[in-house]
Length: 207
Length: 211
Image (cartoon, rainbow over the protein chains, first blue to last red):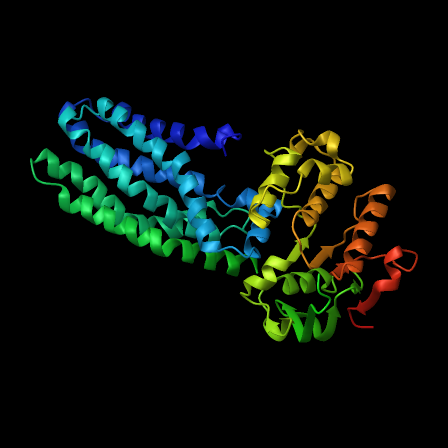
């Protein structure tokens, strides 16, 4: 992945551009941007992850590596966990590192910025893991991207609700621990269950 | 390598959509034997190989390796190598890196010198070229180099001589003969006759497709 720099840069650039379109297109009221900023950053992160999912298994499928993984004696779910986490380091982790930067464009108060770092840090690995399941289901299709979006976006909604909700909470001076716990719980669930779902999906689709 | 290894297929059939490719295929291959699957295009040669390798699900029939089922059988998977048209090579990696990837997956050791294997396959000079810069034949040779990394007992080869020159073909044939003499098993498809090939004396033929 690191020799193929376009797959590394694309999601990040897409994320930043989507998020930056909002300040340009909305009325220049500082308070409005402040209120919607968190949500916009989260939606952009979800869309950028979405964009990178289609290519996740595509080259492995094309060059036959995926078939070799299927018949390898080592655990396929474990390999898929590694694959999803590798995907996360190139998408989710990068987006997380850049989201505090975007907070500046939305005029989000500095004491709230950590929320837009901690939230994505806990939430984006789940995006990669759940998204990988969708990518696995559509890997044999030529234009699987739209289908991935239809299958996966509804599953992203809980992460979006808890993630973006955190910012509203902090703006009102409330605790955000419950949302962080919820994101952590989703992450724990997706780390333990998604690898098996991905492996199962791949076995069925390659068949 | 003990010659007691045997793969047997009972009553295997394969359906693609509404189209039945083959029905009630039975065979048994044991150490030192090469099964040559023949038949016209589209008769299910590749599907048969994929079923045996464990990539596709077996719906009807059974495949057993040393009398235990092959499905989800790590013993079988660790002894079986499947080489097909899709070489399983990463374009972004060099030839030797591709090989090293499989070496670490398959044998977990660094003992076997990869350079020697590449040299044996006649592609040592391209060791540091990216896989996407290799010619088709060189890629085929590289994918066969994988067979030499670990001690695979069963080689499943889908059209091993496609896109490869005469010396490459001779090389692969001699590797196969060596493998068979050591008690290995080979299941391969090839659309041409193997009567003139050194493999002939080890070979039994399975004809697919209705007459």
